[in-house]
Length: 145
Image (tube, rainbow, N blue to C red; front, side):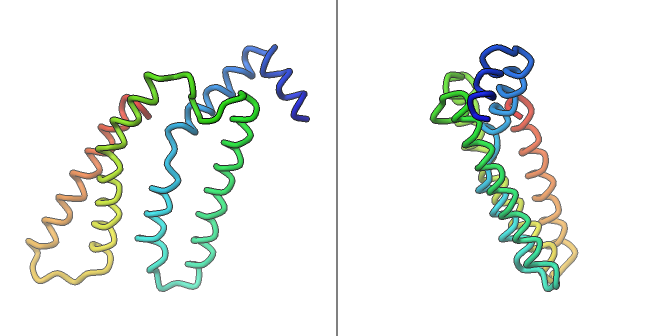
């Protein structure tokens, strides 16, 4: 099967384009960020579904890793988008700004869910901070996905 896929990748332009696109998506994915959202927002839930939801997140990240490994093998790469220096440089710059916003967003969401506030003003400050993280993450994703 691996030989067939490699032959298809080498001779079918549409299949190569599909694989290359999925590889680009893999380069942009950050399973560590998704795991942090799970730890901050799913794990603390007092629900019988919590273990199942945590297992789902783990399973999705495992599938992502397996898919990435298969794509790297198919393309003979050691990392996603190995020859796309422009994208990799853009992601490196983006992640330096967007990753902390993701961490802050998960923490803010957790606090908004679990804390009782001394005043409406205290809650409004967190809600405003949440809006800022949403806007910042969305803007960071515009050019790099």
